[in-house]
Image (cartoon, rainbow over all chains, first blue to last red; front, side, top):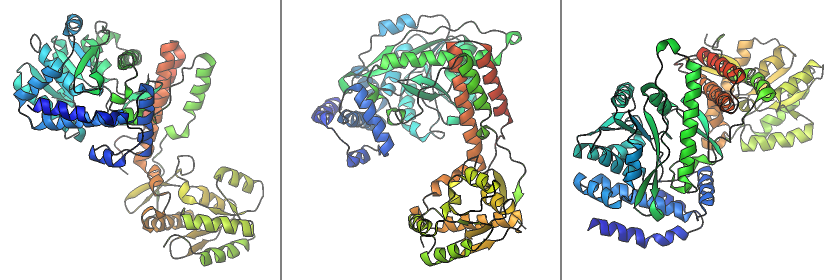
Length: 333
Length: 208
């Protein structure tokens, strides 16, 4: 009955998708107040997708409604509805998941990513242990909803575990991958921009951590990019996977080379984002970070030979890279 | 209160113009003060020291100048390099006013809320910086958004400077990594490692 009500509510609000313009009142109602720069970024995303800004508003409404219902609904009902909405072709996923060793599934905050993760984890947990890795709600308030939904999943399936992004959680994820299990994480989020590197993404640069690549390299796990596609902007979704990225066997301490590893991790991360871009296609308005992407950093230059040498001279002479805390001039008597 | 009053500013400009060695008049960035400064600048031919390096270079060439300066706009690592501690807080202050007074013999008229303080070329460095400190305090007391540069002052904090250094190092490292992917070679690796060394030398866990 509630499923029918949700579908009717979503169908009744379909005309919103044709709305062209901005509604601050609607943004407030949807808990998504934007700055001018954020709205301009949403407009740019909608322009890439070839849809009016109303499509973004409607998308927020779909998400808000589903999350509200799922937060309060009993877990058995939530699991049933997620299965009902899932249009994923699991044959392709099962084939990719057959790779030997651990499987690190990486998925951005795109489409119905939460529902995709829940559906994927339930399906995979039939044969393997699955861990969901994300920031604890106390470290990232925005993850409270993830936590509520994922706990419902964990409580309904003993082969699903939750690992929070902290020292114990990272150790748990590495252990799980080494044991040939599946770990799912969302790499397009970070806590401190200072910890990130920039990779090419949809015509600009995207701040991202290299953690997923480090995890895969250290454990020899296969990385599998996955995207949640919202079907016609409705509550239905399909999880689509990219090409598995196999890692070379981890080398011993005697061969350790931190810089070489970092270059390798960066290249892996660039490949993951390239696949995300391909899988997302033009549907950028379904991506949670479309609010900031188009006023984020511009595309990274690729410099070679003399240009790189000249840039290196400039970079290393930049006074902002050196923060001297001495001498200190005291003005206290 | 929205910054300097027209009468105070008028009087200070007259006093400053009488200084044979030149003078700088430190004012806050508020809309009314900016309008007043613009008017007085036209009327009296007093400049605005928007580019501190160019201004001081002209001083070095023997040119005696009288100018307004919006000190609260000097927030970057280049324009605010002096680390100052007072009342348990550490922040970066600009060097412009101290150099103008101490090296080039100019007089400093510094707005500190109720009035302008006058500091002569013989003033000690610390006295000049204390006047700037009182200027910042007066700016902070301005109501709400009256002080146009309020949000920018975070750039003078130790934490923000370290954060900015880290962000820039990561940006330059990203360029090295990306360039190294396109054309693997020793140059990108060397640049990356040199930047890593700079990162390692940044203060850790600093609280402003």
